[in-house]
Image 1 (cartoon, rainbow, N blue to C red):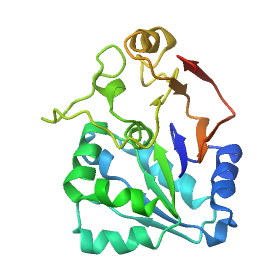
Image 2: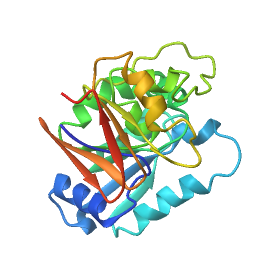
Image 3: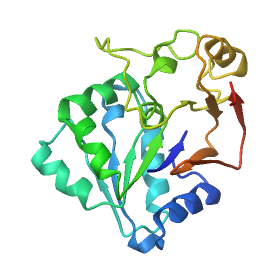
Image 4: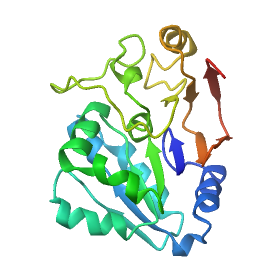
Length: 220
């Protein structure tokens, strides 16, 4: 399985190259399906998700489709995901994203899709790749609005946790002192990554790709 887990998407040349390496294709041959569903319940300014999309268009990929799995039926979105080389799950509310991944049936289909496609996470899209979304529900670290959701199960694609937006001014609890508190409650590794950092996963090989800052807690 191939994954590229990011805090803010394709924000620099190193992360862009990591995606090309995973795809084994030139940019013009890559078809991207961008899933913005997690952002639907976020209030206020949405320039951040526009920036995520603009950064994708700058890479000269062959196609950058937008596929909202909460807005259209499976018979419409599935062929568009199947046509893509990279499935990019965007940022926003992690609970809302997992709710729609389950409700749409994508959770059952995704393992098959990822046999030949790359999973790219942006913020919430990276967090749901873990076995659960503990770092979202854990009050010292994130304390996200659950929108009535009680299930904290994630996709279980990785055996570690990702905490995006490390040291960001917009996420005051994305600091080492708060993440350390969470790390004391769980045995698994936590990667705290900033917006210029990604985790590249190719089979059983994990690699940090960074032009910024990151910390690893509970390193094995």
